Image (cartoon, rainbow, N blue to C red):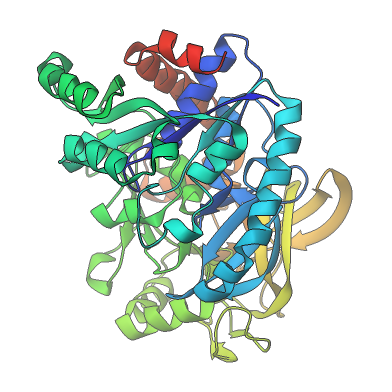
Length: 509
């Protein structure tokens, strides 16, 4: 088996995913054959691997950091919450159905078995595995059912680093408290701590670091500074609760910026679709919750949803649906991705209760399409070309339960000619009129099932050029792949400069 190192945390959102990604890149730069792993993830941002399986977006990002293709082996269990008490359960990349919390607890032994099998396969292919935990290993009410943290560390024979977020406050108490609540056998697996998001002079922490060593017998192996300007893909919609993302394009927020409004759905999924737009110079991407926040943007996007009907009814209740319909009727441009595409149509039907107990709802009626949610889930990496837009090529991935049929007043947007590495030929999406070229401008309304469509520079630039032409604004170029690679290198540089890499290397010898 590969050598293993695990990053757990004192709680959620302390930086575990980012630290794992950084360690993967640091090690691969040293010539190590390394891979990421998370036995179970709960996230609505997901990715489709070359096998056509679905995993958490964070593990795909970590695989990119390790310079290897993402695999279902890296995240064998994925939970996608679709209500307050239940989630869709995905095992080895394939959805097996929806479960309540109690049902999943009864199933967890099977889930952990899948995790063990996938880890064994992944471990046989790599020299080092960097494992990510979930939440905290010391949650008393959850510990009985938790196999993501210490049980996974024990399975892999991994030493554990516990990450803590000093920006939240109470960092020393959280580190000591975590150790106190662990069993003795679990404490023995802990090799040290990493403090994340520190602002200021780290030498001022010396007394606290000395105290942690005396109190727990474990050193703090790194103090990572708070940093801005480095593009990191998030996996949880909670990061949007603080308001509009401020990375990249934020520096260009002025009266000349293109304004793109994304609806902040309750069950929003794959909002990383819009990261490339938010990092474009001269583009502002903001998330809106109520009609008063909508204003008069250059474009409105309805994102993916894990519960399309529930989120559509919520938009209706809030009055945000009417605001979007009025905006479109007055000439505003509207787009929908996946669940948002379904909402733009005439009807959304769920006869089998795939996502909700509501069998059918009327859509916004902006696109002449009708959707039926089906039990079989589509998961595929795809490639194709844009219709009526110079044949620009693109890549992306599909993750959806629905099948959408176009009416007489809609025309397909894309031609898919490659699916999971094999030749294919079928249409995707719908547009109210053709044209994504600079001359024609983007369609007034369009929708697609393709996640990652904005990652394609040609498509994104053509779309933005059409919007800018309408407003006589310049269009600076952006190579999104280069941006991601540059920021991964910057992330690795920051982390490597602020941790005891010599001590960490000893843990994986």
